Amino acid sequence: GYINETNVKEVYLQILRGRDGRDGVPGRDGVKGERGDKGEKGETGPVGQAGPKSGGVVYTRWGRKSCPTGAELLYEGITGSNYDGHSGGGANYVCLPKVPQYMSTYEPSGFSQIYGTEYDNVNGVFSGKDNHNAPCAVCYTSTKSVKLMIPARTSCPSSWTIEYKGYLMAECFNKKTNAIYECVDENPESIDGSGANNNGAQLCFALSTCYSLPCPPYLNNRPITCVMCTK
Ligand SMILES: [Ca+2]
Ligand SMILES: [Ca+2]
Image 1: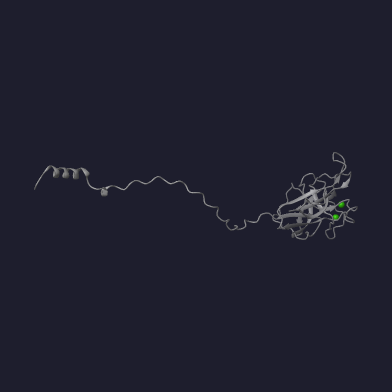
Image 2: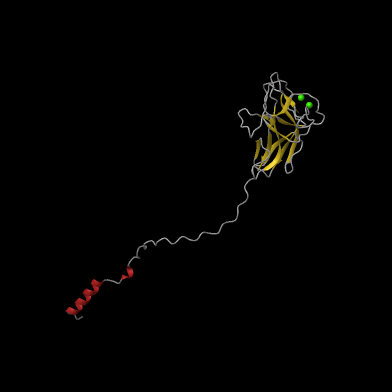
């Protein structure tokens, strides 16, 4: 009950001070920290699975019935090409399988014709092979991925493999048709019983000349060599 000036001051001060801070709201988030140092590089992962196999090489060994060691024989065949008296037809030699498979029986009035192919004027190099017909072998090597036939060489670039070497041949110069140059094996074989002169298509040596070729090193009228290379 006793009120004096001191008591009144005390009550006022209590009101002015207010309550303690317990009722305040939590503070906001702090400022973001600086970025840490980059970690060390992890270990190399395991080697992935091998991708799909690519490549493998197919080539024709002209003049032979078998493939070189290391190559698989896909088929043995008969060299065929356009008749030397015709100017139409294909320019390439084809390695015809020994046993054909036909489909249509139709005989058109317009056509080209495939003939057998004889070695022509070759006895000086391929002894006794004149007029013999040329076999061929289609060869596959799965361990290689590219092939290259080099004319006028008997060796391959370093790290390449020689599949076979021989002579560059095509149709003879005085015939109506022409043909793509092919590399005929240096030791050609004959199709059995084919020694008669039946003509049709020919394989003649391609000779180097000194007309617009640099001589030497090229020589006039020499059979040009060739080599089949793979890698
Ligand atoms: Ca013949
Ligand atoms: Ca002939």
